[in-house]
Image 1 (cartoon, rainbow, N blue to C red):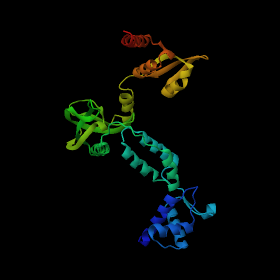
Image 2: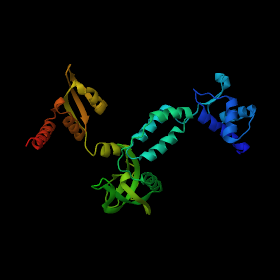
Image 3: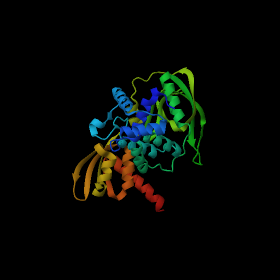
Length: 323
């Protein structure tokens, strides 16, 4: 049986699980659930006193005087819409295997009332097909963050895909790095670090690591002037390339896709019912991929050197298929 001192927590749990703005619970229902769930007998006045005590701690609870029905918990860490967004992000991640995704989603949904949780469970789906998953991923992240906080080097074994599409240890053997920061970019976790045999910062996929060991050696230096977000933008999102400007003429049918791909980096120069001439600022590889993917529906106008590159790529492809 629950001790008398813990009954206030029981009431909080009942409000958390069984109440929301669409499911208001009366004092009598709270008494019933206390008895059924926790085997606690409590009079109404004690329930009122405990709810007042919870409010005095800053927990926002609407009561009978507000709605003339009963009580419900207003104060929650996340709104249902926020939980749905987080659940979808977990479900969509290729880095998290199906079973672990379901566990994390279950914990997120548990922050809501059971009624909101049931609605979320009907709309959140975990896809089955995933990349080969490194079971040490979460351990790797924790270990690297501990090393960063302690200012210690780590020894890691790098992984790579073999011809059976399985992660195996790289032939390069273990390496020692000075870790600086963990980053999330392009759907993957990275560690920004300086290898022991190098002078420059670089990045490694954390899911391509195993057997991370914290060493009793201090990191080579403190990288106080490096902004991890700026590094990720430059070397992960842009792959070290410099953004350039391109004039591209495209069919109007591509307009929506262009906006979704380039957003604020796109400026309309000229438009007519069938075509749109735009100036786009992006890295060369992204523009090359865009132009080649949409073939006859777009044309590079400038710069000329890039137009020549596309012409060469098209001709090489043509020779492969029309020998």
